[in-house]
Length: 121
Image 1 (tube, rainbow, N blue to C red):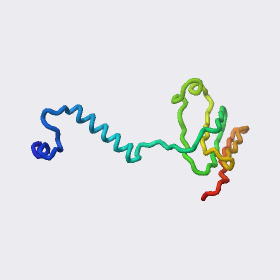
Image 2: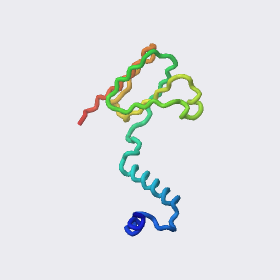
Image 3: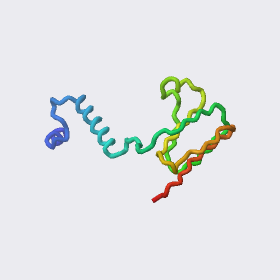
Image 4: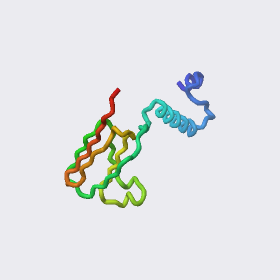
């Protein structure tokens, strides 16, 4: 098996460095995953337009059009955000006058509604 593999260039020669082969396989795997789109970050014309701090709430309702929602721990952010005990929400959506965020944060039952009045076409 070893001879046939080396003859067909499937295995490295006997003098090859196995460590370098392992690194090349890992790099090839990572590059392949990135090119296939399996490891990608969503990007687009979205900008953080509003930030809301919620120190006490009993429930939260999110009425959204179409988006990705991620909840991140504050330890991932730098100072002073990682020292805040309150919940911090950041909303990113396209800058358009027909898209607006309506927020009711005065009561313990918080409501956020993203209204998208754009034509879907």
